[in-house]
Image 1 (cartoon, rainbow, N blue to C red):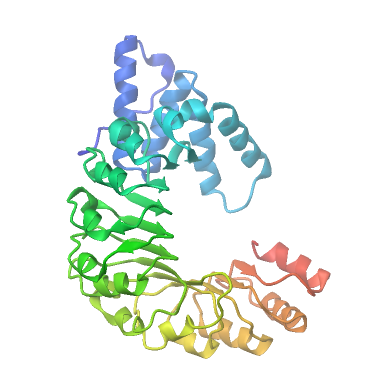
Image 2: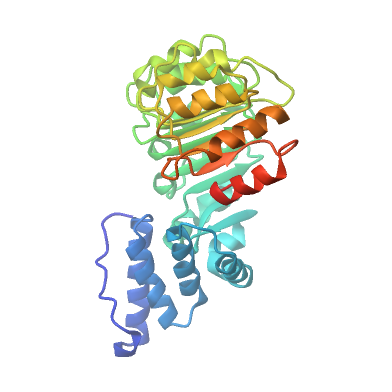
Length: 385
């Protein structure tokens, strides 16, 4: 998918007297332009206009989705119409992906994520990526043989995101030494067990485009992170770690160049585990950090090392700590605290409602249990929840 396709003028469809073949060619060119630059709204709208001229409901769906993204408030009627169009026409819009995927998700009028077998993508991936700006491919219960087939798929270099979930124990070199695998921007691994020590494979992985990594319930996750810390090419922007343990020795690694541009960090506990994650941050500098999720207790006074825009804490914290948090984070736009005593919830809600109207905080989530209904109602009106 190289090069950008020239966008035609958005003249009314009534002026178009070209042949059916010419119109089909024009539609293919407009779709290729969307695929080449998925975030370009104008290209999406031009293609949507062409679809509407053909009587295709996908054109309306694209327009409504872009209108929803541009709105500053929730519009239930708009959302209901989007859901209706997706329900009635989603399978047809999904096309080849709908035929082969176990599950797929429509986003902004196109398929954005899909879950299918490695064999299906190896066989049909090129055509799928010509029909939709597929951002992530998910593989569930895969085998080593299927992964070996995947890395040979012609479409793999064009794929930006890959999610692996609960497959056979995997030799990391199968992936890290595959040239097409080097082009990934987003790599997610859930419930992965490894054959051998992954440190060396990830230290040598030539993945200069990799920006986001998720490791959840992955054996030797700390060794993967250690390998990336030694990698001279990787510069992550987003890292999500769901660890069964704290990951002994991982703390110092966050100071390595691979994490110098890290903007988003999520530290999640496995179910049934308590404590241990906060220690991972104690020596971390992370100068670019703007979004932080930590599924653990953490001292609020330590957060002033960063200028955060988004923060999610398990807690518990009291109203005094809540007030210090707001004072120390002038750029904070989204705040979520999931554990707080009822009396502290009400005090914190009262503090939040006293913030000036031009304060950056636009989203606030605190526990509901024990909250004063009147304070909660006022907070819901002011802050999107």
